[in-house]
Image 1 (spheres, rainbow, N blue to C red):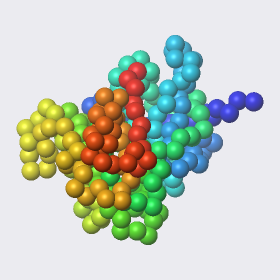
Image 2 (cartoon, rainbow, N blue to C red; image 1 turned 90 degrees about the horizontal axis):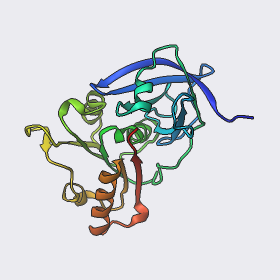
Image 3 (cartoon, one colour; image 1 turned 120 degrees about the vertical axis):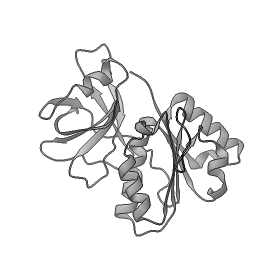
Length: 230
């Protein structure tokens, strides 16, 4: 008996020029998942028979489940082509990115690497009676590429324990955005007894992980997740 599920698209939101969030349910309900997990999506008409993994950007307790997808190649292009009412085959949620649930959060994301981190941040704020610090360091090419920017700004404005810094690589620096890549010196000053979450491209994740280790962060405190282009 197949363990795969049939999901139906309920809502579709364009986050940036090349990123959409697809909201869906299975049998009219959101998935039962933990913050930071992911699913595998399958399309029979592609040559990727094993499917492709996408992190859930939704938070447990949301009305709908969601994935946030950048259009890069054929597979992600097919996801971008889905409309409200369409169906797709997915796996059950799996993975354990959210590994340090009793510690302050230092999250370092690039591009759509924000997806599982967004799930974790919202879980922390909605479901925990805590004032533990949440620091988000978020890199994109331009300000127009910052996924969930309005919602991130809103959280940082409403919660004193949420701190965000944006970084871009192709834009003039402003009072709110640094024109450079995030580096360890941005992060390490307030890192004592924190759990680190790093998500983005393979090169980005490898670079940040190496910098954190060299700065003295124990590898057991670093959770990483890599996005592969397709």
